[in-house]
Image (tube, rainbow, N blue to C red; front, side, top):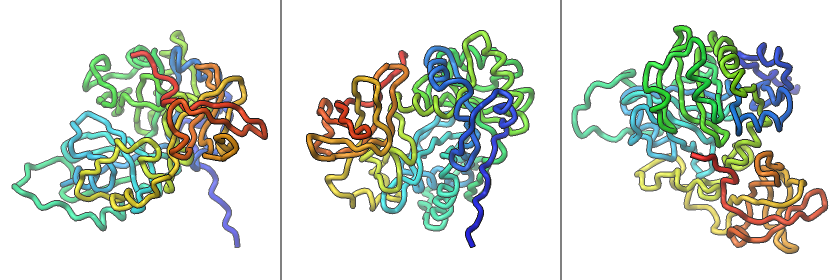
Length: 388
C-alpha cells in the first residue's frame, strides 16, 4: 500500500504570509511564500532598498562539548577549528564519495560551541551525516590538559530547528531598518562594527536574538534567529520600521533570481551528491591538507573530464532554464542548472555544467531554448556584485 506523503510544514510566520496575500509553494517539505506581489518588484526592492524574507525552513544544529571543533573538522570539508568566536564560515557536508550532501554556514558561538545552518530539504541528510560521523570519528589525543570549556563534557549534536524562526533582512537599507526596529537591542558587537560573515547578540522584547551579517542575495544584510514564539512580532516590527525605507516582504522567487545574479549555488541545481566541490568552483572551501575528513578519499576518484560549473550570458529576452541543453557547434557539451532573465542586468543569465574544453571564459556556446538556439558566452561568476 502506498503511503500518503506528509503535508508540507508551515512556518511560524504562516499567518502573516496569508494576511499579506502571499502565493505559496512546497519547498523542501515546507509551505513557503513564493511571492507577495510581483517577482520583479520584490527583486528590485532588495537591490535598491530592502526585502524581508522568511527563511524558517532552514535547519539549525548546535554542536557543543569537548573537541566540537575537531569533530566539525572531520565531518565538514573546511577547517572550522581555526575560526574565531563571533565569526561565520561557509562549508560543505560531503559523502564518502566526495559528492556534496549539503552546503552549510557555521557560526562559532564559543570555544567549543557552534551553530550549523543547513538547507531545509537536507535536514535529515545532514543529521544522518552528523550521526554517522560521531560513530566513525576518532578524536586526536590531547597533548596537554585542556582548559575547561563551555558545553557538555562529551560531544553533543542537537537539532534545534523547531525551536527557532529565521528571518532575513537584505538590502542597502537593512542596517538602518534593523537599527530602528522597535524592541531590538544589540547587546554584543554594534551593527556598524560588525564585519561580513560575523554575528552578534541582541534581544527583541527581552527574547534572545541572534544577528548574523550573512545572506543569500548578493546584498548586505542580516539573518535573524529568534525563538518561534517571538517571530511574528519581530516580523511585524521590522516591516513597520522599514515602511518609509522601501522595505517589502519577499518570497522565494525573488530570492532565487537574487542568488542567481550573485552566482550562489542552490542545492539540487548546482550542488548534489553527484558533484564534487571542485566541479562547482568550491575547491577553495575544502581544506585538503587536513589529515582526515569525511569524503577526502573520494575527492580524487572522479574523472578528469568531469563537467564544471560556468556562468553564461546571452542577449535578448529568452532565458535558458534548468535542464536546457548547452551546445558547442553541433555537440551537446552541458546542461543549464539555473537560468533567468536578470532583473538587475536586463539580459538572460544562467549557470551550467559544461565539458572542461568548453569552459574557458569567452567561449561562444548556445542554449537550446525549446528548439531555438540562443547564443551564449561563458563569463566569470558572479554576474552581479554590489558596491562596497
